[in-house]
Every structure is written in C-alpha cells, then in structure tokens.
Image 1 (cartoon, rainbow, N blue to C red):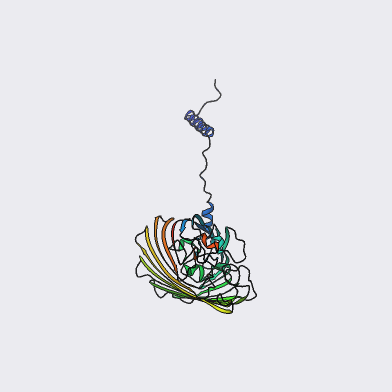
Image 2: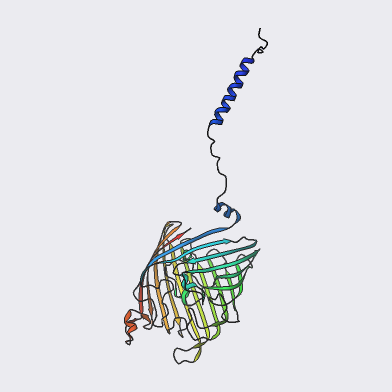
Length: 395
C-alpha cells in the first residue's frame, strides 16, 4: 500500500515545474548575448562639454614666371613663393572652448610650409607654428583674451578656408602684421557697434624686442545685414630689423590704419574694399642713407559671385605704394589682379584654380638666375605671371 499519494492535479503541477526547470537549464546552456554598448564616444563627450575640435588641410601647386623674390632679396609673394612646386601649405588643428559666459580658450596649431612665414620674429624657422593660443573670459557684451592671437587688420586672414583666392593679397603680406602676443578687450556697445582695445608686444613678436608696447584700437559698425565697416589702428615702438622688416638694428614708432568695408547687395554678390596706410620712424633711406619716416599705403578691391552652391567666381585687384622701400626692400608702385574659380563638390572640400598678374613701375622682380651673375639689368623684369591650383579639406 502506497504511503504517498498525489493530490488531484498534482501530477500536472509537477510536469509544469519540471518543464520550467528544463527551460531554464536550456537558457543557461546558451551563450550569453553581448550587451549593447551605451558608452559615449570622445566626440560626444567633447561636444557635450562645449569643446570643439576642427581644422583643415591646404595643399596646392603653384607656378611663377619668375624666381619668387625681389631684387632686394625679399620674397615677392606671401605663401606661394616657389616658382614650380607642389606644396603642403597648412595642416591645421584648432581646439577651442569659448562659452558665451565664463572662462574658455583656444589653441590653433599650424604645420606646413606657411608656418615658416607666419612664425613670430626670432622663432625657429620650422614647419610648425603655434598660430594662436589664448585664454578667454566672456560676460555679457564683454570678452577679454590674453595670449597669442591673429591681427585685426585686413580683408584676408591666415585661415585658408576663410579666404576666396588661393594667393594672398599684397596688403596681407606687406602692409599689415600677422599676429600679436598680449591682451585684447572686445565690447559690443550695441547690435551694430563693437569696440576693441588691446596692448601687445608688437608686430609678429612672441617676446617683445624692446620695453615699449604697441596699442591697438578697432571699431566695427554693422548697421544692417548688407553693409559692414571695420576700422582699426596700431601704434607703438618697433624694431626695424629682423623677420619681414627692412632696415638696420634700430627702433622707432610704427603706425598703421586699416579699414575694411563689405557690401552684400544680395545673397550671391559681395563687394569688399580694403585700404591701408602705415609709417615707420628712423628708417635708413635707400636713396641717400639718411634717417627718414618710411611710408606705405595701398588698396585692394574684391568682387565675389556665388554662382550656385558649388561654384564661385572671385576677382581681386589691388595697388601698393612702398614709397621708401621699407616693406619690400625696393621703392616701387606695385599692382596685381587675380581671377579665381572655386568648385565645392561637398561642404568639406573646396578646389580653386587661379591666374594672377603682377606689375611694378620698376624692374624689381628677379626673372631668372642671370640676375645673380651681377650683369647690369640681367634677369630682372617689371612683371610676373602665376597660376595656382589649390585643394582645401575642412574637418
């Protein structure tokens, strides 16, 4: 006689229990599926924190009909100085954190051939340059930066992606500085007017070559979306020798006034006019060796037409008067005209084709090696033709 009996329905409950245990055992025997990753990428983290990392590559081929130098030995172009060469002009990385309120900063690193040109006076002539590096504080309409930063004057800039031509203008290379090291205060008095004041070590100087400082003052006026005007001035004691400057190892007050006006009659067409006036005290005259106040002035006009989203046509014409030869090493009136056709297959890539002609009122361009033989008038000319092909990639 059985001492143990199942209650009604007990057999069914036991079978269900065994089946459930069997199912759990089968699940346990299966390999575990990998968990879906939810960890944010480095880009996500930086974006969320307000830090931006971006940059660009600027590569090109340039052809010059001359040697790329004046009879004074000074380069007759800014970046595209090789007569027949492919070039990595700039490989740039920019890291910035610039909130509308509070502290931030920016670092702009440049590698490539152009780094040698924009490097501060006295720095090593390598293919690397810390183009900008500054801390920033912003509060309402006020922004203060301290460190190394690009200059205020000029319609063109070092950053290739912000220019419309391949070659840089005469004014960019010979009328104004590239960068400064010091402090700058920007105050927006209204939606239309912004005032900028600053003090720095001088033109293209990481370390000041003298005890005196250079002051900067700028005012920008934007009454509407179609028109804007920016006027800026610099004044301070500067060394005459070294870097891009011509003259003996003395110093004197250097002053500069620059103005840039922009007019956009519609979304496709843009007109720009840039004018400069400068002077340098205590320059040794190239004519009679006396001490003079060297002067230079010039103007550049631009017409940019955006045909559509992919094609753009840009024309530039300018005039530069180096009255005493301080900026180029030769006394001359120099003119140039440039035509650039740009094609943008994507928003990240821009291809530019350019033709340019330069003309001086004197035979100041070194045309060929015959100049170096010393024969009077040999290898010199008053004009130069160039062709440029450029590819810019933004990331």
